[in-house]
Length: 345
Ligand code: CP3
Image (cartoon, rainbow, N blue to C red):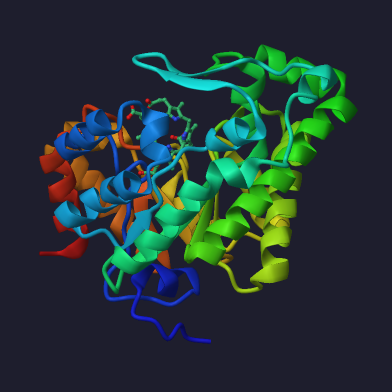
C-alpha cells in the first residue's frame, strides 16, 4: 500500500522510497542553539519548559526553521513519566537529572497512575499545538523512554556508570522489579496513546541503556516491555508507526526487531553499515547513525562518513539521523552543512 501523504518520513516508514532520505536529529532542539538557550532562560528551569506548551512548542520549531528537518519531535523528556508517577525529580546544572531513588517494592508505594494525566496534560497540549503549527510536509514524532531506561534513572537516582542498584534488584528479585516495569508499561502506553490522540503521527521509544544487559535479561527487561507497549498502542491504532531505539545491543537488535513489532529501528553509531544493509534493511526501514561527535568535528571527516551512510543505507527505505543525541558543543553551522549534504542543495 502506498502512503498517500507527501511526508517523506511517513513514506519511508511504510517502506516506500523517496526523492531523498528523510532526516531529523535526536535532541534536535537543545543547548547547541542560542535561541533554545534564550527560551530556556525565559522558562526558568528545564521542567518548567517541558510543562509550558507555548515555550515547548517554540523550542520544537526552532531547529525546523533553521534546517528544515522532515520531522518535529515533541519537546519533553523521558523522565516526565516518573515525575508524573509521583517521584521527585530535579535537573541540576552540569549534573543532569536527580531523583529520590526507588529500590524496593516498599518504595513503589509512593508511586501511582491516578494523577499522571493531570501532570502530563501540558505535554498533550504541546502536541496539539504542534500538529497545527509544523510545516505540511513535516511529520510530528511523539516519544517516551522504554521502561528499562526510565527505570535506570528511577532506581539509580541519576545517570549511572555501572547500573549496580537496578541490576541487583532485577537479577535478585525479578518479581518485585517486575512490578515497577509493569507500572511503567502501563503509564507509558497510556501516555503515548494520549500523544497520538493529540496529533503525534509516529512514536519513538528510546531504550538508551538497553545495551548494559546480558541477552537473557535484555529479552526480559527491554524486548518484553517494549513489545507490550507496541501491542497496547496497536490495539487502538493498528497502523501506527513506531521506531525502536535499543542502543548498544549489537546483534541482539535482530531479536528486538523480530519480537517487538516495531516499524523501524534506530541504529547506534557502532552498528556496521554493511551489516545493517544486509541483515536489517531487508526486514524493515532503519534510522541512523552518524556519530554526534562527527557533527561537532564537521569538515571532511563528517562529509566522508555522511557520504558512506547515504551510499550504503540509502538504497532502501532509510531515515538519516545520528547514532545518539546532539551534544551541546555542536556548531550550528555543521548542522546546516549536514542538511545540505542530505538534501543536495
Ligand atoms: O530530541 C529532542 O529534541 C526532543 C527532546 C528530548 C529531550 N530529552 C530534551 C532534553 C528527548 C527526546 C529526550 C530524551 C531523553 N532524555 C533520553 C533518551 C535519549 C538519549 O539522549 O539518550 C534520556 C536518557 C533523557 C534523560 C535526560 N534528560 C538526561 C540524562 C538529561 C541530562 C543530560 C543533558 O543533556 O543535559 C536530560 C536533560 C534534557 N532533555 C535536555 C534536553 C534538551 C537538556 C536540559 C537543558 O536544557 O539543560
